Length: 174
Image (tube, rainbow, N blue to C red; front, side, top):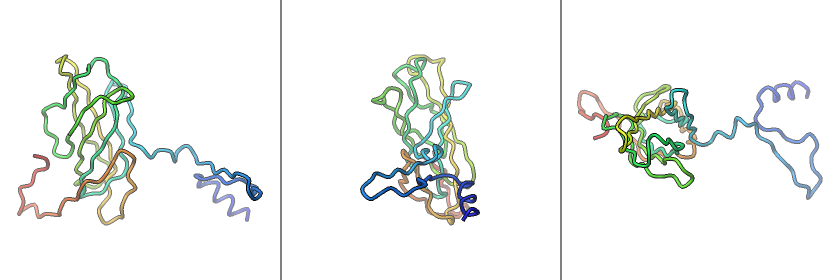
């Protein structure tokens, strides 16, 4: 029994009380802090740009990703995506978030397996000198390795058919 306890202690995650509660008494299960990461994480980097971690995705799938950037006073209220096309990541909507900041909605097309980082630029419509870089970081797994549990703020909106590159001129987003 002691060996089993030692193994469980190394794994971590869920902690149950040592003694079972009496009938009718409330019981509590405590989760390690690491397990609360079920939402898209937005972090401000040292250079003033943002990193958005969207978790695990699956190749050959298209996702809608929604996240909130904190307020960036230099950007102002009128913000638009830069007209530089990114074949895998496209901002579809920018609006004021009810809690402050900007609510960003984008589409991400996961075509390649691995740890990927795509970026888009947000421009101020009132100040030509202000530009914020948003990097979307995803871990994309092969389509044959199961279905990932998506973070809150990420939803699958379709799959891409496999294609033979010699027979297709598909280039990503239009």
